[in-house]
Length: 331
Image 1 (spheres, rainbow, N blue to C red):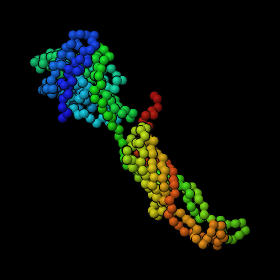
Image 2 (cartoon, rainbow, N blue to C red):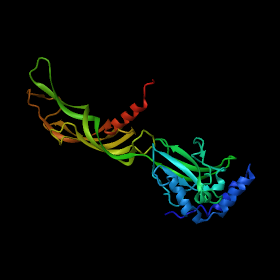
Image 3 (cartoon, rainbow, N blue to C red):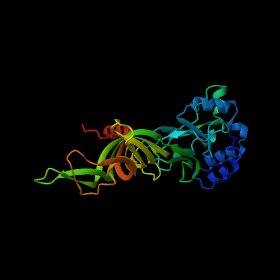
Image 4 (spheres, rainbow, N blue to C red):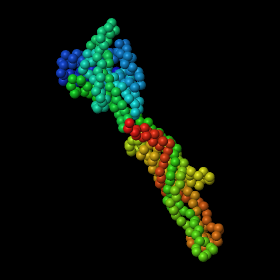
């Protein structure tokens, strides 16, 4: 459990918020309550009851004190995931209910304040006393694929004064390993090609180098992870690729090893070295020699050739589905 820090910062916060004031009595009451608060004030029974009523234990609710940092029972890292919403609730002395508010990232929508409940019994009277801890304000922040972090901000409602509290990192879903299809173009693919001259029965042979298109099955590994949402970060989407030829009969005549970069999840470009089965003339037969038809003196070998290509993996379907969901036809 994180040690309480709200009482220790009470004096500094009180001086900070009392520096400017349009309502002297309210500001002084809030200041005095902050100065008088002890560590136990934020963790005793009445305060715990207020936290329970505000659903502070819920995953999508984050409860903070007047310094903008989490209450003693809260985690310092709530594992905020991109695309989720977080409800931030501010707790402090009841005397600050009309003075303190909470926002997130400085550009959130207006904050709704919660006033002290009307007295209605011993428990209610105790909760509404000036020094008792209660819910003061709440705000909701919605994260998306572009959100890196959110910062809790506690501010004065009567002025533009405020302080920044805890900053929460936003986690983005990512994958590290995937299977895909590579359309590769290998350069310098060597073959032995016979050709017949007009009017002759014999053929002449020669070695030719061509660009060979092929399909391959690949496994892609991203050491930095690849984000599930399209988002340029530099290292995300950069990985290594290994694969074999799509024609598995035979299985030992085509291999690929290289790098892959996915600018969008599931679709990327690749480059590397292909190990391909190629042909060459036998040593006693130079290129251009005449031979009998059907008697081509060639040998096969595995050779390394550079390749570039386009890669698609299983994540591309999810990317297309997400893009389709956003592109709605107007009513």
